[in-house]
Image (cartoon, rainbow, N blue to C red):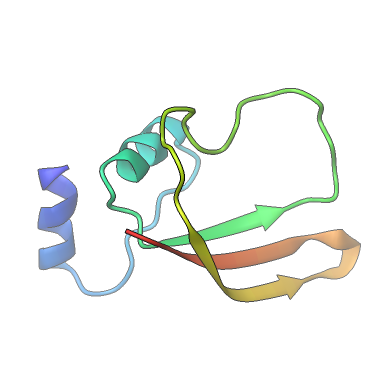
Length: 82
């Protein structure tokens, strides 16, 4: 996670992870996630992997914004407690 900390010092703005659950797991475990932007679709699959790793433990989220769109899509932005 030293590489992530180095990127945070070299660049201003947000670092965004798209579509990598293994990288997201590592960042969550290391406490390197400040904000989660979750897109919730009105669809139940009934199977699949949880978003967060099973060994993460309790992490409190604080809702910052919620936007809903036509078709039922909801985008949630949450701060992640350290």
